[in-house]
Length: 137
Image 1 (cartoon, rainbow, N blue to C red):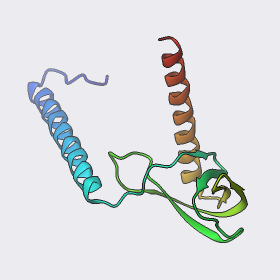
Image 2 (cartoon, rainbow, N blue to C red):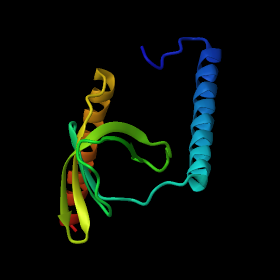
Image 3 (cartoon, helix red, strand yellow):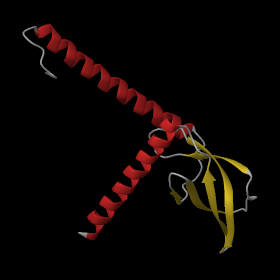
């Protein structure tokens, strides 16, 4: 049974010590992440739409169509390392002194594809929950 340490009190104290150490390591990693983020040149936030197969965003400068792209997405500032995706711009439309870009993602390996789909699903659920929370106020 999970959490059952039997009659041996040293097992319980070892488990609580491990939990305490795990908490400290997690806290330390989060603090280092914030320090790293403060010193990192993270690009300004930009509104985008990400699906499992493509990415849409507005840019100040035009891109050439079908040129390979290396996209760096900073999904969480607590973890200041980018998610790197490869794509090519398939559509570029001039709109209001900017360009609307549609990029087709290069198919990642199966583990990354599953993680990307799970991330998109969770972000979608959070957005719906936030909309519901705001509409009830």
